[in-house]
Length: 101
Image (cartoon, one colour):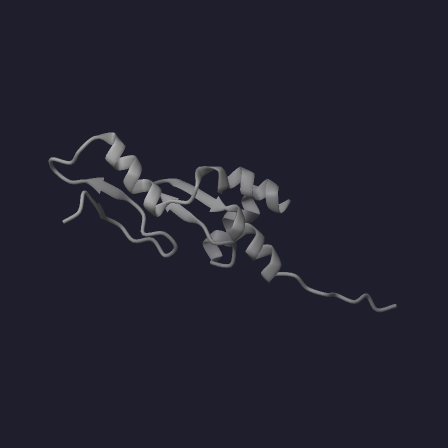
C-alpha cells in the first residue's frame, strides 16, 4: 500500500487522506496532497466564492445542498471551490431572455 490511503469518497473529491503507520515526514504528506489538490491560489472559501458569484453565502449553501450549485470539494468540514469551476458554472447558466413590450 502507498504512503497515503483515501479514506472517504466524496461525490466531487475523493477526500481525506490518512497517514499509515510508520509513514514518513510531513514533507511526504505535502507531496501527496499536491498530487490530488489544485493549487491553493485557485481555491475559494465559501464566502469568497459567494462574493465572486455576487450571491449571498446562504444562496451558495442552498444550491450546494440541492445539488445545483458549482462543483466543490470537501476536506473534513472545509469546503473549497476552484475558480475554473465557478467560471464553468456561470458559463453553463447563461440565458438569453428577451423582454416583451
